[in-house]
Image 1 (cartoon, rainbow, N blue to C red):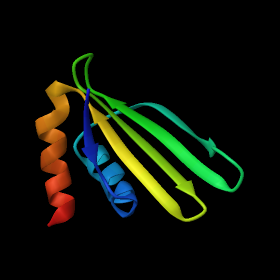
Image 2 (tube, rainbow, N blue to C red):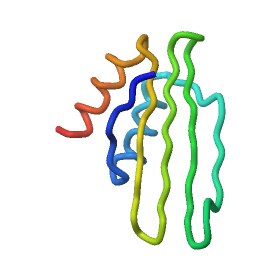
Image 3 (cartoon, rainbow, N blue to C red):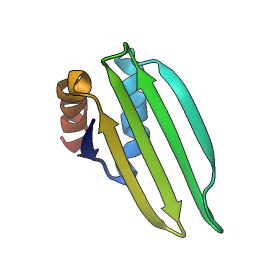
Length: 86
């Protein structure tokens, strides 16, 4: 797995891009992670080789987000992230 940077502000737009590019959600978990903290994990998977995991946590306004991407999905995800930066 490769780890790619994503800002908290990009997460909603990234989720939309994943849907528009036919990435099916295979797992989703959301909830309170700590006292006054919120987080979620979303897994998209096209095949055994193509998998993307978005980890998001908001701890009292301090947001952390990270993508875990398989080698087979890395180029496509980097292209999607470049669209967010434009």
